[in-house]
Amino acid sequence: MRTAAAAAGRDWIGLRRSEETVLKSVDQLPLLGGILGLALLIGAFSALWYREATAHLNQRVQISVANSREPLVGTLVEATADGLILEQPDGTVPISYGRVTAIDRLS
Image (cartoon, rainbow, N blue to C red; front, side, top):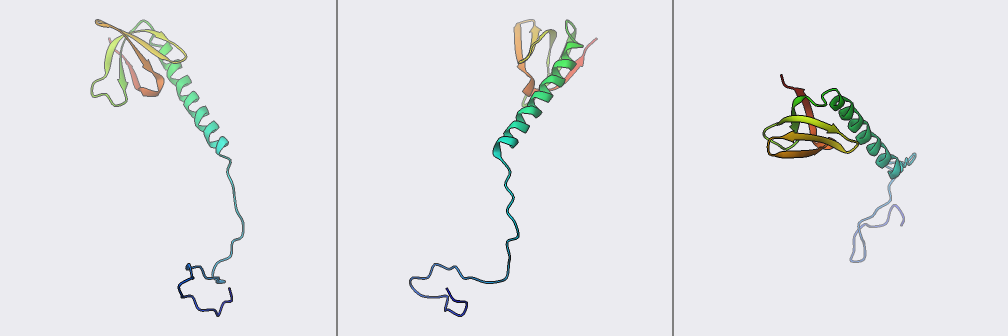
């Protein structure tokens, strides 16, 4: 299309060449790097909660859980690679590290 051509008509789709902008470069980020980074970040947070939990094993604790109004209270009996096991009067409760927001020891 010539610059002086009319930009109208039944068969025109609305594209017009101009010299107003110049594309200097294109950067690409691989999606796998982002997914790998997210996996490493989740793994790091799980490792931190695991380390925090092992200091409270066999202690009475209060665990704050995401999307829960009340924290869970009980005895922390196990810290696994996947999450925590909390013993409560009505049974055991498994909690994944992804939902843990705080662990506090109760006296």
